[in-house]
Length: 332
Ligand code: AQP
Image 1: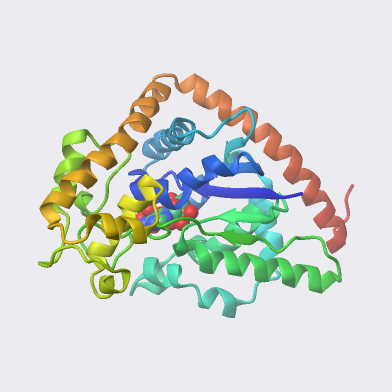
Image 2 (image 1 turned 45 degrees about the vertical axis):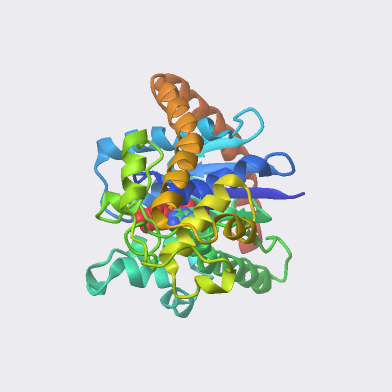
């Protein structure tokens, strides 16, 4: 059976990168896979969070899932902390994860920065929690943006290490699914940095909740270079901002990058930015309107999460029991 697991952190400022790199692709995957989409609040607390904001961001991501077209009747939607097997499995799997593997993780290096000794253990073991999220459901496929590929490879290694240690084929090795033109949406202020929730400049990203005017302003102000748009893909080398804006256009329009380049060849940035602004607004506005409607009914959103967590608990608890038996932990 093919089963998908993926998630988004409720850390605020849900942006176009999260939408194009993750949520948009999930919507179509629901047709062919059994899907489990999580709001990964335990991952979020590896960085300090305001308790009130964490709670409201959790509901905001839930609303974004529903508004984007995730169908709660078909798909399991829940918040990670409501299913305790994620935390329990993290301990078990951490006993199969050599430190050398974790030391290679670039996200830890980026987020811990120069003050590595002050970074919390949770930030360091974040990838083991991610492996547990996936393996608790024996998920076979994980749709992620490029930025999470290294963590997913680690999940495969941990699954393999467990299977090898007990000479079993218990965990499937989860496959990454990296889709579309916008696998890595870059910052609007610097085409070499990932568009990110935690970037200090709000002008670096388009938030799903941004107004029309703000979207237009952010696109107008987006960094570019002095040349007109190219006519060939290889002319985008060393033009990260142009590549990013064309990539966003092609992903939102479901068009091949080559076709978009042919369509826009020779245009100056100011006219392309107008076309791009209109497209972004036409795709994002209906989602943000629906999100706001869902957010007016918080009890409904909580009900969706409760029902989802009941289903998730059932599947993951059964798997956890099997895992404990394999390890030799006495079940009483
Ligand atoms: N810029 C991006 N381009 C494409 N995909 C992206 N994703 C995130 N940023 C981009 C994908 O969105 C999913 C959920 O990400 P997340 O919220 O769990 O964590 P993240 O990757 O750490 O997102 P941010 O925005 O970059 O948050 P901060 O600033 O807190 O680190 C994942 O599938 C991710 O690949």
